[in-house]
Length: 237
Length: 237
DNA sequence: TTGCAAATTTTGTCTATACATTAATAACGA
DNA sequence: TCGTTATTAATGTATAGACAAAATTTGCAA
Image (cartoon, rainbow over all chains, first blue to last red; front, side, top):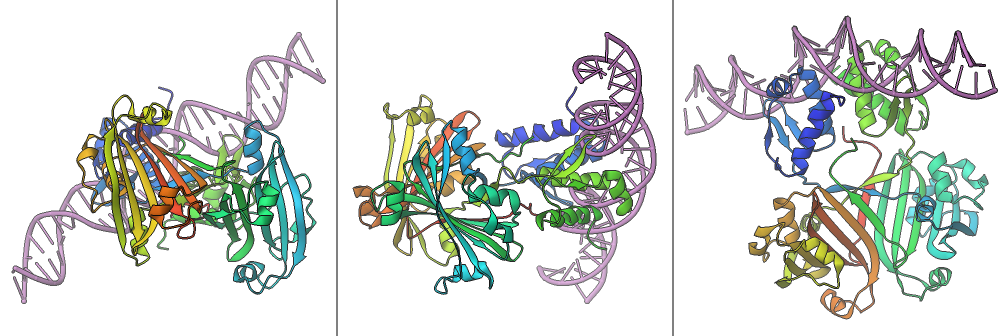
């Protein structure tokens, strides 16, 4: 009996829910019954069920009881690790090639740039991610000079700007947009593919509070890379 | 003083962490100090911090203390709602057109099909998702006849097989693979685009335990649709 | 210095109890 | 019958204390 009772109750019901034995909408025993069944106090039952509720596996309503949640939102956890770590994790060598770097005013024809800059300047950093010398993705990153003053001085010859930002700037909110586009002539040139080749385009915007931090656009060669999301409704135990 | 103290402690630190005031690695006060600062018992502090730990915002180590977690994994929540609901939510009309439906043996040349079928048959259902009469995506779905016996009898003329499965079959694990591909001739024909047009390809496999349930392949017209993931590191309160 | 053992600090779990909050249900009056 | 009010069953929050477990620190010995 080394595992705590609280964990046991939690994993008991997690298992019964995930296995389908307890179908969505099914009612769980009330706390009183569970404290008798497990021979413990109500607080212990309550902590276990509270954790399951926070994990989204059950819904709890006062007076009504505890019910298995319906997986209605169908939300899932998608891991988008650091690209360098991802490549190295496959046993390949990773390299970041700086293509262009400039500090400039936002383009008045692109409202997204103005919103990001917030009246100040933008720092644009373009680069190429390579795995074993093969082009993997083109990255165009716009950073608000006001939001991240130190960014202009950082050295990106050995570290990709993505890694740098992740370690130095906390974000509070982000939006990812994933689409498919054909490579333009210059993009295709860098990626060493035929123009028009279908590419996976990931655009990410991050904010800290109301202040925009950065917009990134990553263009992956379709055959060379795809996003993999493996997930389950469970939380790490 | 309507909000519970437990929630207040939780949201206090959540705010200070997300705003960057408490940087990753920073140490939080020990429970003894917090119970004095908030004038409450240690259990209350403990429940608040346990919730933050479950949400992944802080790490707690015995004897060492409580620390702001590093956002290393960079995992995010991506909502892939029901396609029909998504389209209707935009105020467009949604239609599912059944293209093909067959029960067959798994193709021995495709190991994924054999693994899914698990010795039994497969039910293949191909269809087209339309928004306001415009083709949005082609869906090819393979379902294990053993895992979902009732699937062969379900009627998909008015309901897409995706919605049906979501409501009738619980899954425990899933894998999503997102890539960019050019439309084949027949695909382009259905989607009313030029062959080779870049399309977003979402392949999803779901399992219940070790048993495969279904493999889906959704091919979206690149211009007509993109996946949007908006997220923050926070948990719903 | 190195290595191991003991002491201490901090979180983890648990109890038994109390009162608050919410919402389903029952009771009641127009 | 209908709408309103009271009851009550369930979860939510909180307390004060106790012991367990783990990891850092300290101290002692080889």
